[in-house]
Length: 280
Image 1: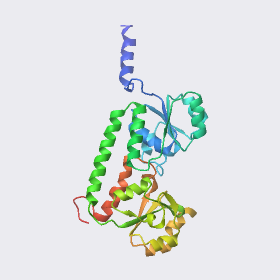
Image 2: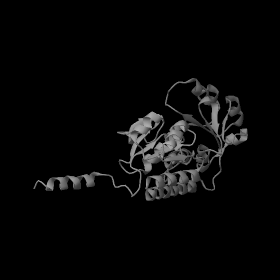
Image 3: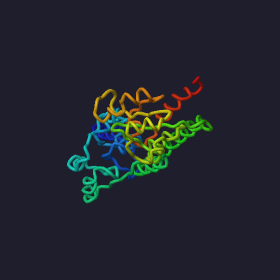
Image 4: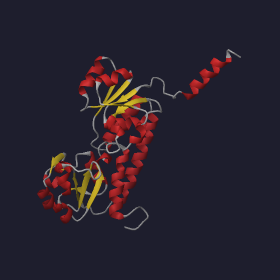
């Protein structure tokens, strides 16, 4: 009887341990808001030990509720190394000093570029899923995303394309060569930023917005009702009185290239046409 207890305990341990794929990393650290969200979507339970502190903030992340129990990092070497990661996922424009130190310590690092379109989203999903050993989950996520893209595109196919302008704090806009621009295109709008010569990121003063006269002004909101000098431009009285239609969208919805960003597209289409099966 005394010998049976260790065997039972070992069997219980095997049952409760996560079922990782052979050779898959077991201590994953992500150091970038956008890579955090892909990792949280694709990892097995218990596979992730740390994500960036931004991902725990609902104003920044769509997956803040999934960070409970994880170590939050600021991309600092002294935070990451003690976690003994066997995979670190980072953005190619962030935490570069830490990435270089980790590489010198032979810690595997996956660098991801920001997504500028849905092809980039697919590529990043596949890269993260391959690194985590969850390829099937990645392909399933892409299939669900593609089905939703097709369904949304079919709702505006053949319709007139009104002009819309994305307007963010500080007077910045996003052109058609950005992920937010791709969302606007999928929703059935022409991007009015092109008329001002902006294809990527750019600033548009209030006076220019009034001259452009977009049919819809999509105002990016970082924190609801949070006052700031940068946000004052999007609250300018001239815009509020002279723009025919204004819709506010939390910037966390388009900050990262993840499938959930399609919620913006659905919301814009529903605002124009009404919900599917309903009346406009």
